[in-house]
Length: 229
Image (cartoon, rainbow, N blue to C red; front, side, top):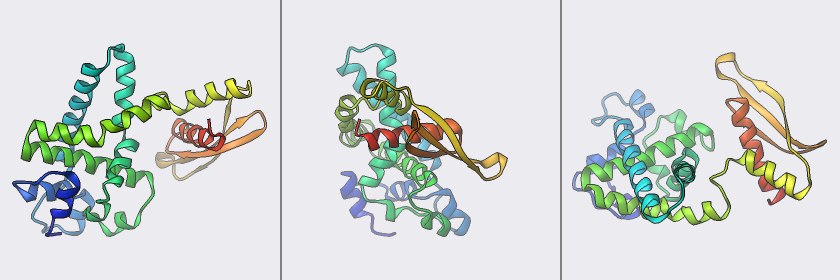
């Protein structure tokens, strides 16, 4: 991965220190298979980028909206959660440039991969901040993250899927949804739950997660899509 110019083009940033950008793309698993690699993994940059991201989003919401603190907190959470950041990172089309272990490279379309993408996106923000400073970092976040705010507000995505599905179900059919664990897989310390969400006897959707709550949220999100609510 010697030529980083296409990534710089996607990011809209020309790095002074190319190794700072390169390191943002290194996942810990890659170093397990390449212990002599000259750079470290991206977790320190992710730590830095997470703080920069939160401050830029917070500042933008504070300056542009008079809403109460609780609402702004929910809006911010919907902008900086792992699923949103993974979606944004995927849209940048740099997934193939991440340095991963062979196992992680094969393991696509999983929750673990989403976290890798989200963390890499935060690491990229950290790299931009370290190399370029505050203003370029802010502009990058405004054009990649804050552009999603109108959609979040329009579709009320800042409300969690379980609450949204319950409101919609009561509004459309006058029924309160119920949830049932359909199966549990894996050892006690690492279970995967499959949960069904029901409108009376109708199973609307199934969700998976590493906890019952996570599986319920996944099921509710899929049920919203299934019903078009």
